[in-house]
Structure formats: structure tokens, C-alpha cells
Image 1 (tube, rainbow, N blue to C red):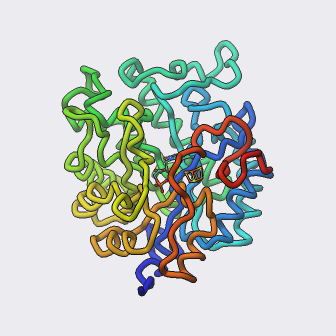
Image 2: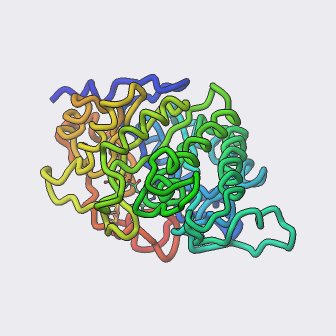
Length: 369
Ligand SMILES: Cc1cc2nc3c(=O)[nH]c(=O)nc-3n(C[C@H](O)[C@H](O)[C@H](O)COP(=O)(O)O)c2cc1C
Ligand code: SF4
């Protein structure tokens, strides 16, 4: 089997991915109460990925504001202390790779369950509603503040030395919640049945972020190709239309994912054999047909044949999460043995680890940092 299509470099926006394999954002479970990344496990996680030969790296979801935090051990990008901590991690990781590294930025919205340290009275954090607030309950000026807060976080990520950012518009977090008619029930200019209104916050966020980081950084998006929530949830046709607009606003890489909390485990589905692989490819192909920017497909890639098939269907990058948790050296293993299959068995036990940083608990039941 010829794997040249997988191991060819790709020019994406101002950057070059060293091959077509991309690390899909994966929560590291490795931050303190202030969202500061713990350097030891973070250097392990990203160092292993760098040495494993991945072509482009996206961090785990990183909160842009204390009220948009999804969990206690989530990393943040809300101030210069965060940027400095990430700069140290990036400097260590860059020694082992030329792969571009993006910071995934997110605001959890109704899926936010943890506030972090309580804000002081008159703290500017009060400009945004408490964690867990749905898009339907934001005041318009608070939605405007979300866009500027994403831009501030993106500027901090650039200061830290990231090559760009990936804006999280998937899985039911605030920007995804905003895009979906299933969740966005507003009756003003920020939502409701009208697609253009539901896209207002995501597109204005892209504009603000692009202005903040300039042309030399990549602005990417992770987008739901399907919410799996009929009849109102996003489906591939609507996602493809949104993707075309995101590209017009300066997004240069769109990763197509799926699912929301109430849809069940549609994001990280079971993969028991070759027939289960690439389970979100049709939505990514729909998106790729509507846009000229790079498109990544995520979801269940475990071996070369489905990857080559996706690339032949117009997909530019193959994104991987669980295979790289168990086997960060998966790209090198595949390159050396074209019939290699990921060692990950897709059991999802690495989701929501109670103790310790990201790892495969089948191989490492105890924390390893
Ligand atoms: C442990 C774990 C953590 C994850 N963290 C994130 C995250 O921070 N941001 C995100 O967009 N998706 C996250 N995901 C979803 C993955 O990026 C990916 O979309 C999904 O697992 C399907 O890809 P896979 O079959 O290659 O694992 C996570 C998944 C797992 C298993
Ligand atoms: S815990 Fe399961 S899903 Fe996660 S990396 Fe290990 S084998 Fe894969």
C-alpha cells in the first residue's frame, strides 16, 4: 500500500503541516485550579506526540474566560501567566517537531460546570454570566463580549508562541450551541430559526480573532457536521453552508466533527473493526465540496485504507484523538508498516479520568507524571 498521500506535507493558511495526520483536540486533565498547565505531564503529552511524527497538533480545549470553563482540571488562556506557562511547554516540544501547534479555544456555555476561583466584586469577569448559562440567557452585550474575549485569548495564544488557534464550534459548547436551532431558541438578532442570526456570534468571533492575530497565524475551526438531534439540529447541508461562510471570514482549516451532550456518544463512537472507521466522513465530504479551504475529518480513523479513501474524496487532513492517547507514535508506526492498526480499542476509558493527566488507563491504570 502506498502511503504517500498520507505523508505528504500540506500548506494550510500561512503554515505547513508536515503530513496529513492531525492531532484532534484532546483534554489533557493537567491544569491547576487557576487553569495553569502543569509542565511535567504537558511536556510528556506533547513531547510524545512531537516525537511520534504527527503533522499538526491541536491542544485540548482551553477556556477563554473563567465562566466558560468546562472542568476543574482544564487549561486556560485568560492572562499573561497562562501565556508564559504555555510558552515554556511549547519551547520544550518544538525541539522535537516542525509540526504547527494550535491552541483550541473554547467557551463552554450551558456545558460549563466549573467556575474556578470566585471573582471579586466589580471584577471584569462579571461581564459574562455564570458558568452553565445557555446562549438563550446571554444579554446581547454579553455575546459581543464573548467575541472580544475569544480575540483576547487568541492574542495571548499568539504571544505564547502558538502557530494559530482552533475555535471550538462543535460538541454543544457555546459557539456550537449558538449555531444549532436545536439549542439556540433566541428571538432576537442572535438566533432563532434564521441561520444568519444563529451564525452572527461565530462569524463575529472569527472576525475579532483574525484581527487580533493578523495574517501570520492560522485560524481554524472545529465544526459540527451533524448535531445528531433531528429535526432542528445541524445537518451536513447546513454545516457546509456555515463552513463556506467561515472560510469567507478568514478561517483556513475546518475540522468536521459531530454530536452534543444530549445526543449520546456521537463524537467518540465505538470502533470495533474496519467497517466502523471514518464514521463522520460523509459530513466532512459535504463540507469539502462547499469550500476551498483545508478540511479535516475526525472520528474513528484507525488504519490506512479509510484514511486514503477520505483523502481521495477531497479531505485534506485526517484528525486523530484516541489512537494518539494510547499510541502517540501511531504516525511513525503507520509509516513503517502500512498495515498497522491503531492499538486503541475505542473503549473511552480515557474520558473523564478521575486522577492524573491524560493517558490510556488500559496501559497505565495509575497516574504516570
Ligand atoms: C479523552 C478525550 C478528550 C477529548 N477532548 C476534546 C477536546 O478537548 N476538544 C475537542 O474538540 N474534542 C475533544 N475530544 C473529542 C476528540 O477530539 C475526537 O473528536 C473524538 O474522540 C473522535 O475522534 P477519535 O475516534 O480519533 O478519537 C476528546 C475525546 C477524548 C476521547
Ligand atoms: S482508554 Fe480506551 S479509548 Fe482511550 S486510548 Fe485507551 S484504548 Fe483508546
